[in-house]
Length: 138
Image (cartoon, rainbow, N blue to C red; front, side, top):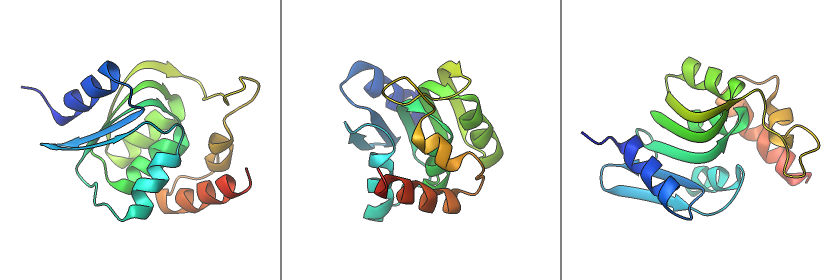
């Protein structure tokens, strides 16, 4: 039997999307990069509790946002060890292709700024505000 997470993963791997959320026949897609689409989903007020998600890269910041959204399963092409711990702690079933020590910024010369913003944060609500503040300063 195919799960919502399997469906989300198939759309992510087979298409141009960066994020796919599925719950039954309801599918939410994004082609935006980073945590921006997650912030957009949250700010839209969409109720995504119980959805499964597939994402290209999931670091701790993204994992905390997925926890805030209430997703129940998460697949990532690349997931950081810190993101895996967030998923375990928040009851999100996590699958990944590559488990990375950390997520690197787009230039490849430092840690991702969103990872830095959430390094000492474990609460999804606190993380949301920290991530929004970091985005404002970029």
